[in-house]
Length: 128
Image 1 (cartoon, helix red, strand yellow):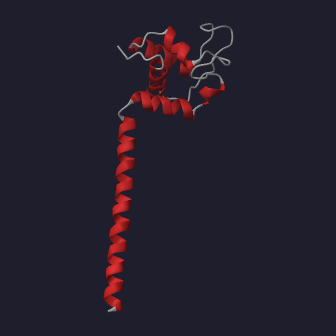
Image 2: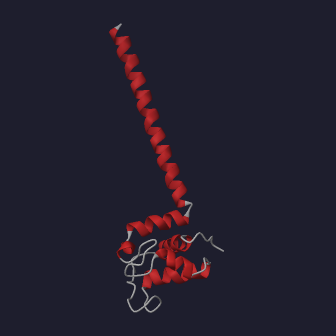
Image 3: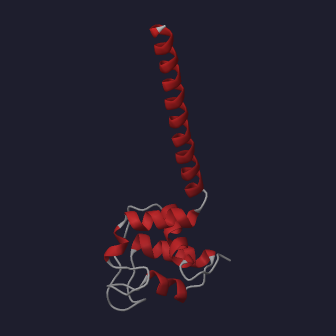
């Protein structure tokens, strides 16, 4: 009798553990897929993981303009995504004053474009 209870308990425990693990993996996979399919969300994540917040704030001017001010200045077009991605990678000066923007040469053009798309989305505009 004790053996039957032990086997039954073991089987139930394995079933519960395997179901729970699969559920977490599915949620994690779904979240990763959703992020990968949304370049604006990916851009937001990249902005938060890089040194952007040293000079920029979403709504307030720090050293550089707020990201929202950048979004208001530039129309959300493919040409402006390319322009801002170029500024992110190579740096820039004179657009917002005398203080230069540092270059981020270690970023890929694709990641810089995702970051630019995120910034340009902050005023509520959709890409044209």
